Image 1: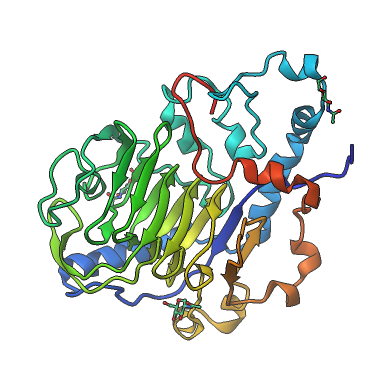
Image 2: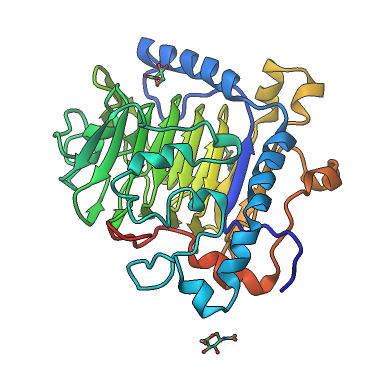
Length: 376
Ligand SMILES: *[C@@H]1O[C@H](CO)[C@@H](O)[C@H](O)[C@H]1NC(C)=O
Ligand SMILES: *[C@@H]1O[C@H](CO)[C@@H](O)[C@H](O)[C@H]1NC(C)=O
Ligand SMILES: *[C@@H]1O[C@H](CO)[C@@H](O)[C@H](O)[C@H]1NC(C)=O
């Protein structure tokens, strides 16, 4: 066994950037959206971490303190391996290969303690708690046929509520969104335990909001929405222009955590995190073949950035990506500061896993087949 410290994260992307806004898809930038954008700016400033290395170091410390357990998981020692190991739905011992997964996945009571996950985020988005302070809301109806007055029981009704909600699903479900799903702040969309697919329709939009967890969804074959009147909160709806067909758009938002999401084949980017967003963690997710081979677009508009901060500040704003699973020619589209020209020694703190670990690392990325009452 190779005893070097290793990085065991199948797909982890930390982003930190902070720029000004344009109004993506908002038809009428009315008072409601102006207020929302202002509040978002305050939240984004508060969430911005000016020291990306501290975040990485914090994360590394947790990986390394747990590396001994990880060795146990890889050891082929049947007696030791099975004793105390909790079997998952496939009668395999549950193996969590990173600190985020370790936080909840191998507990057989995860479904009774869903909100435990609100304490599990790491990286830049580690303060994300989603709907922790709210009630559970159960999606029972996969329909999405009324954009302005969605029925209670639909996903759309849940995400537009003004109060915090922890949104779960009553069964396996295929949801075709007729138009962009405009998610409000302080929500968790928790597909664990079911096979929940957002497929064949419009995308999810996280715009000028804060504190959202999205976990265990399949998002694929997303197409642009035509635009129209769409409700975005309990008290407001308005005209949206045609959307791009990204899987998830993150726009002017902060404290966003996307975990165990499988994405493929969208009309535009799989995840488009642009303009004015900060404190985002994307972990354990799985990105496959995509139309235009663009998987994650984290474009920074430097021109707009300069409006907020002097160059000596913004030149260090950066993204980092570790161990993302990019398949079938998928590529990552970086911009902003090139990490290869920027004190890479200091920043390259997370050691890559050897290639032989690829199968193991990828085995737990993407949406999981969890069964309630069993480790996941
Ligand atoms: C691991 O242990 C099992 C059960 O004893 C054995 O069948 C298998 O060959 C072992 N694998 C390796 C790689 O040693
Ligand atoms: C989200 O929750 C936080 C903490 O409870 C609260 O301060 C904030 O106002 C909420 N945001 C919205 C938009 O309701
Ligand atoms: C990434 O997003 C920006 C902003 O929307 C867009 O201008 C750019 O063309 C996109 N890049 C790619 C490669 O799609």
